[in-house]
Amino acid sequence: MHGFRTALSGLILLAAHVAASPAGTELQGSVLKRIFSYDKDLRASEKIVILIVAPTRESEEARDVAAVFREMSLFPAVVGVNDLNDDLTATLSPYSTVVYLIPGADVSAVKEFAAQKGFLSVSAETSLAEDGHVSVSVGVRGDQSEIVINLPRLQTERHELSAELLNLARVIR
Image (cartoon, rainbow, N blue to C red; front, side, top):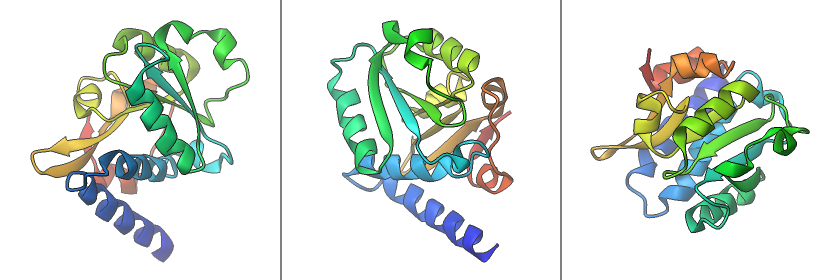
């Protein structure tokens, strides 16, 4: 239990630095990777695939995010909204796949896809979690960083996060 509390404390400190650091993307990626460890399905996975969904595969922002996740030993793949289909996901499992939504991508298509496949959806835009388009977001509110978790969306995607993490986040019910 002590190790769990230490990890939670580290997550709080890491989230607090997201707003203050010029390296926000890297810190945000670190926070998201830690959040994955509080998901009962993802924490057991040895390999987490991150489908980074952008308006197009050529998105520079998506490539930058992919580079950050790759440095964290995750397995990112940049895809366009038009790539979201059964062929793409034939070998992927909801126990090891996360959908990262880049702003500007078709929110409704990503939302439907994540729900249908049971993939956890995340974003850097807190408004997307507030509005129920993704389950989890890590962003900035004022001069503070925050984790926003949308419980109805989380349930739709058939994921469960630990109570300890829910206590750290702003939870939308």
